[in-house]
Amino acid sequence: MKQWIKWGVGFAGAVVLLLAGTAVVGSQMAGSKSQRQVKVAVQAVAIPATAQALERGAYLYNSRGCADCHGASGAGREFMNDGKGMRLAGPNITPGEGNVVARYTPEDWVRTVRHGVKPDGRPVFVMPSEDYNRLTDEDLGALVAYVKAMPPKMGGAAMLDLPLPVRVLYAFDVIKDAAQKIDHTLPPAKPIAEGVTPAHGAYVANMCIGCHGAGLAGGKIPGGPPDWAPAANLTPGEGSAMPRYKDAGAFVAMLRSGKRPDGTAISVMPFESLRALNDVDAQALYAYLQTVPARPFGQR
Image 1: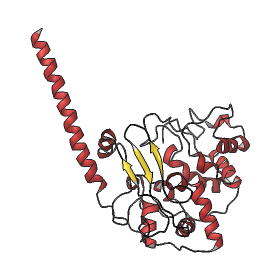
Image 2: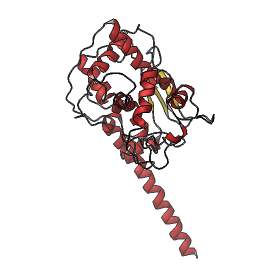
Image 3: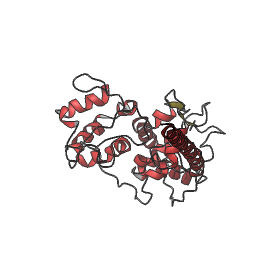
């Protein structure tokens, strides 16, 4: 009996040492990974300061998630604080001297927004660049034009406080940074006429892939906190959430209210952005979702 106890204690001690070693190595690997150089070929886009471009840029800023992390004014905001050591804040991106984008070149904007890579070549940890990677050159230029035209504000730098378990998961690629999630060879989207059509809806749906996956079948949201509900299946496949929306009106009402038709609240959705979608974009998105191939839930 005593021998078994000794073996048990020895085994437990070995496990503790193994876990501690993994944590130390993982933390070191995470640091190295975050400092790696990511080489991408970038080409500047036109950044027109016309009234039309600024209006379009403002719409994109508010409806495609920029305000969620950087605030409506661009001065930055804390967008995640789980109370367990994870705190994330988007930086001040207004054009004041000393702000993170103050010395951005046109190429830097493309590198950061479209590719999730900082001007110095290091990866951005949190940025929906997998969505922005699919913007047309015209929309990307309009978005940048709007940000560059924002009044300078006092604000803070980015905050990236990650607890040890998250750093280890990042080190071993369970959690990926923005640059890892992107096909950097993907050409910019071609302009499509706006209208309540599946073709335009497919372009709008690019804002959904970060959570629902490129196949829109949902599942566990990569990099999300453990308590986040899985993203819904937006295809007609097994476990689809779409049958509950009998028509475009019901679907758009959900985007505006944050509630399902039965009145229950949806817990994890970027409703600040979704509420800003205009009727054409929202209805086109619904039209497109009626045409996507069926996939079982979770086959992102």
